[in-house]
Image 1 (tube, rainbow, N blue to C red):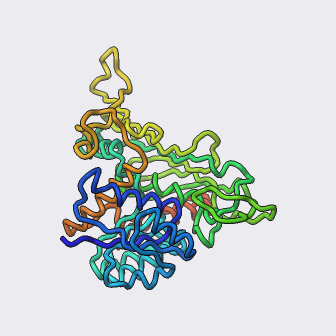
Image 2: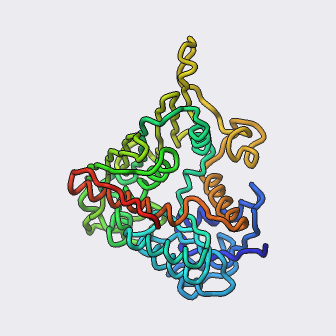
Image 3: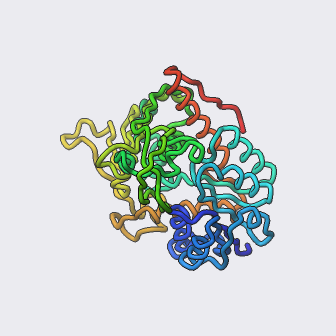
Length: 388
């Protein structure tokens, strides 16, 4: 297969993470297909030029529309604010480009459905950047569930807690702006745990939610932002997205669960976690200890040492043959991001669908929309499960 030319659109934190991933995939895993970091795009020419030099791209540009339609580009990597995901994704699909798109997929369900429809027409490979699902310990949880080790799933309890929004004087970045972000904490981090719940437990049937905005206004930024870092001005602006959501879930298979997400939890810098309880055992994961999976099996209940035990990521777990010679050596955020890219490139090389793809993204957007609607109605909201 010929080398694939990548166009990265967006030079912020996620653009940096994706660039590192494309650089190290061949070193870590042996890339399924060779990739060339061809062109990086940012509307700010200085940022684009600096990113090309720093991230190792051959060229830089300021107009994503021209780049998307270039015949020498094979992959469009979307790392821009949420309001641009749909227009870039739709144009890329129409142009026949494979697409890796940062989450959330879009601003609305309608946008997501249009992105999926165009991708289906041209048959391109698509992937959403729900990178945490590629964590080896989470994939180990998936394997244990599929092998029946914890029996029939009864309950799921998930959370994603951060604290960078807890300071009321943190500047009003685009992530607090509905016109740019679509939603707040839910779309930013909550959809990660929704993705994990769908993968591990199954489809959502209905949700009932409380959605809150704790900080109604914040100081406007005085300059550029990188990730969550930026200077604040003395002028205040309105926050019109959610700071937190607490959701009850009814799954199609009869299991039930809860999800709690917030960016206002002091002390929780980036804590994604879940527990899954079944008829034969339980599984627990905490991203702060991402190299570990905790398990408890009912078959051991009569032992005087019965309780939770820790399984360390290693050669016997998913991706272990790619990462470690022995258990306990560990991995970090970029390793997981690189596994995401490895799986994306492998799907392209094998001419098959990736996961999570745009169809998964549509369903996640439907769930997120239902959670926000339930936050307004304070009633159970059914999830649209029609095929896309």
